[in-house]
Length: 90
Image (cartoon, rainbow, N blue to C red; front, top):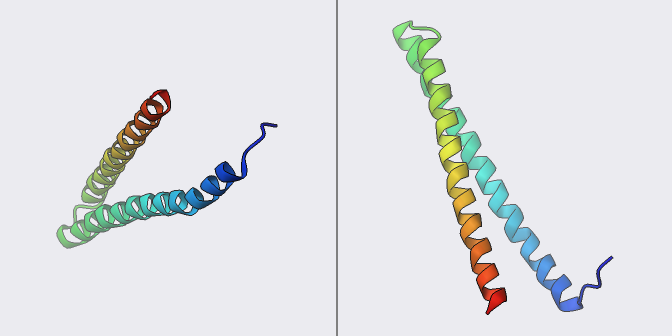
């Protein structure tokens, strides 16, 4: 097991809640988009008696919004990793 200095350990402990909050926020955004799009599709199906078409369209939009959101998070994490790598090299 690698020896970790007390300063590194404290830094890791301080970053943990921040990381947890970011993941919780991501989960809430994904859940909210699914509920909103699927709920809207269900409501439109009931209103226009087109069961299950708008529900399926809402589910497709919910999945698309999830993919877009995860892509944005991935790009942000990639940029942060590149910044850390550049900082370590210099």
